[in-house]
Image (cartoon, rainbow, N blue to C red; front, top):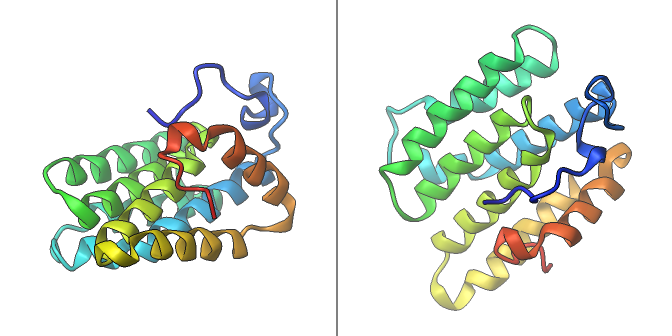
Length: 171
């Protein structure tokens, strides 16, 4: 489980009683999609005909443009995670990253799930002696792409949830 026991109001939209603006929610979703897409080739190398993870990433981006409902993106995320469940290793983690990215439309706090699974995918794909360095490089790649408007929020979220996200944000 990558979500905290108590929901952080910074990841709950204003209309639901939290403090997250729609613009920042969209930025979180786009950043999560970027994290997932960065490792998507690790899934597609194993399952080249299964488009569910790619479609999940496309759906969350479409949601941020207001072209589909949140439930459509959430559903696509579930399909991507179903693709992950039958796999192991980097492909599994990459598909989970895509699924987590798509469900950010529903629960913004899944943004770390996409990032954490992407780091796990890169670690699993690297030779054992290089896995930690590969994970740190991926973490830094992700941080380099954080929009300024959500940077402090995401970095604080990483600090707070690092323990339940397999300590992948020690970079």
